[in-house]
Image 1: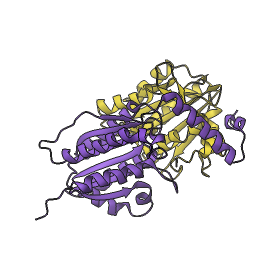
Image 2: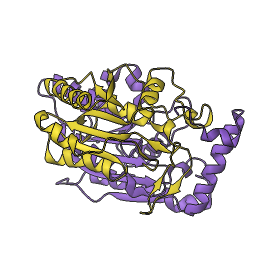
Image 3: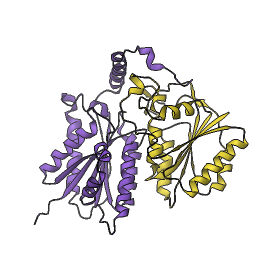
Length: 225
Length: 185
């Protein structure tokens, strides 16, 4: 008899055709869960929504835990993910005697340095959990998400990445907790000086604009005056 | 004076229609020209986080749908009303797509606000005041509180009204200043 737990890792970056932190976090979480004997199903929300979300909805319905991994957009979930959650809730409602998913977690990353800015997004995922009859575990709130991909190999990021892995490990061990309840959210941020982070971001925007044939002053355009 | 009203057509209900009527009537009675956008499921694509609105066509969303028109209407108004079904304590998907794609109206850089939090600086000198009217059938106190927190904790200048009885809306609207505000949102 196979008693292995199953987890759906649901990455909801709206980005098209470029590397996304949420996908990278999903891969990282997969290593942690698979290493602990948990069966993992990875879902990319943009691809799933564009093709056959019902197949993924069914896998989600049968999972022991759902872990939503997404970027913070305007202090909350991106529209892409809210659409997916609305549709998943409708999918569950349309099924007779739909079993509930036992556990829900989330990992939110924000470009701003302070991880606490993700708190309301975690509360939204908790509210969603309650609506589908699931028990919410906790949220991993990441600040300075813009550093994760470009600086992942840098020595100063080791502590940050270890903290992220530890949070996924806590989700994995939480899966077997009895009784499973809500625990405190975790905050992780890139160990990088705030002023340098701001300066690096500014240089990056100006550099990107120049690659597109624009001058720095063009960034300040006011088309709707 | 001009006001722009954005509502969710996909989740349209008797209550949302009533709220729309009340808001429209309130504004017209005060001499506002009213423009409306009813967002259906396919009206606006979701923001794809490409930042083209910052580094390719600064100030304009590069997705070729109706959002540039929505942003133009919003930015040239004195007041923008979002009539929002509250879903899991936040905006519905259709309204959130419009909110996410407000991004062109901000600058890409980071700055620190007086409370120590980070924000993108304003692109414009002033903006329309924004009024978020949240509603929902069987809305829980927690979800109403969350909806308010999402807006009020992070966006200075935006107003939130949780609408139980639409008949009470005119009084609440009458207490608001419906004029353009300085740039820091």
